[in-house]
Amino acid sequence: MWLAVHQGFRLALAAVESGASVIVFEKASTTGGAGNMAFGPFAVESRLQRLMQITFSKEDAFWVHMQYTKWRVNAQLVKAWIDKSPTTIDWLEKMGVEFLEVGCHNPGFPFTWHVIKSLNKDEERPGNAGAAMRVMTERAKKLGVKFHFRTAAKKLIKKGRRIEGVIAEDESGENIQATARAVVLATGGFGDNPAMIKKYTPFEVGRTLFNTRIPGATGDGMRMAWEVGAAPTEMIVHLTPPRVPDLEDFDLAAFLFRQASLIVNQEGERFMNEETMDNPTHIGNALAVQKNGCGYLMFDENALIHYETVGLDTPLDGVGAVLMPDVTTATLRPILDKGYKNVFAADSLEKLAEQTGMNKENLVKTIAEYNSFCDSGYDARFHNKHKFLRPVRRPPFYAGRLFPGSVGTLGGIKCNHRLWRSSHRPLRLFQGYMPRAMRPIQHKARVMPIAFQAAHLVLPSTAGGLPEKTRRDTRNPYQINRKKILGSSFSITYLRRE
Image (cartoon, rainbow, N blue to C red; front, top):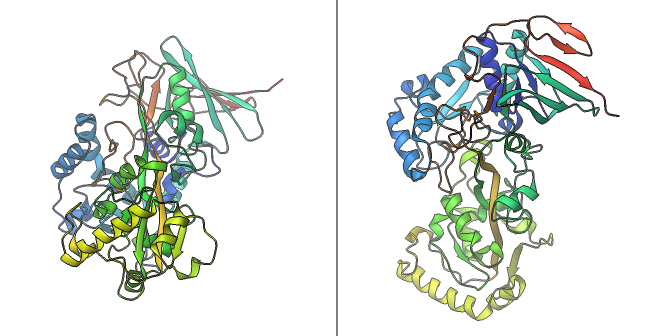
């Protein structure tokens, strides 16, 4: 039984290919979950990489990952995840998924991003992971996977130390009780649950964090697992490039506020090397500890003209580069008269300070010092690179209020490298979002821009773990409204509410 977003869905398909009987409860109306937003999986030493003579190896990936996570993660699990990544690409290709190229998610990253090709065979352009999801969904249905859409799992059924099934609720409000030999819990994180973010992290949605809320990612799986004895672990948000709340992620104006321009805090003082803007975790951490949890990225008219005509100092990367490969310039002018609360323009620094609430005296002093660094070509305070040092002299002066951004959450349930037992509790568990061994622990994981090899929570109903044989059997006939479907190992019963 799978309670699944895209990770669990792939495991469900792999299981049915091995002969297991599989049913999937999906909270949304289609398969894939947040995976449909991605553009391709991570892999190392794949067939495509060998053809392109990309030499970045599994050993390289392992060391980069472990160094960036400061060895706070499970090395055995990381090793297994990386080692299995190329066979995932083989599996997808055999199924009919095509890849356009192997790219790097950000400048300077290793070439590990396997960008999926559009389903339109006549177009040589990228498609998002939804293309792969459709291929896998068709195959899963053909092999007999039973899907229940708009059906959310509510509670795991536990007897003693055994997990024997789940209670779910369909869109009509009917409860469904399903028994099974094993349950895979892959329900995503809690990025769409502001209350959980406030409780378990230092952030508050809409005040100190402006995130992309994936519909349905409300922490259901963690709650259900904790209720039956799963050991909790540290929970954090996955920081992404900082955001000006008024601007959408892919607004051209938003990219102006991701340049390595001058950044100051509410006190009107610099607090970081602006070159750090290229690392979402670093800039997010730096912003989070400032007054009001924000900062202000500033530039003047000369800089704006440069961005409009010559081009951005820091080009689009990641999904932005895939979606808008020809964009090299950006402007702010069309939005200046829209009355945005977090985008500012003023004819003097004093007026800009009044608009933003920054300390006026400090801001003027900061700009004077910064301009002297620009003139000398050396940033004596934070050592920003010379090419990013653009003086702030010519009015109008522009600023955007920056807050940490996020596209999801990490952590929640502890697991060991076998992915099914918690070493801290007797219940056998296998984590269902981003396992502790895979998450960057507030450090940017440069080898996993988009990872399909995320894990799941497996709750075996037998003391010895998952069944050694996964062949179909009919010991527990699958029932819906008392109609038997032979060849399955699940029992489903509707429970009417009183």
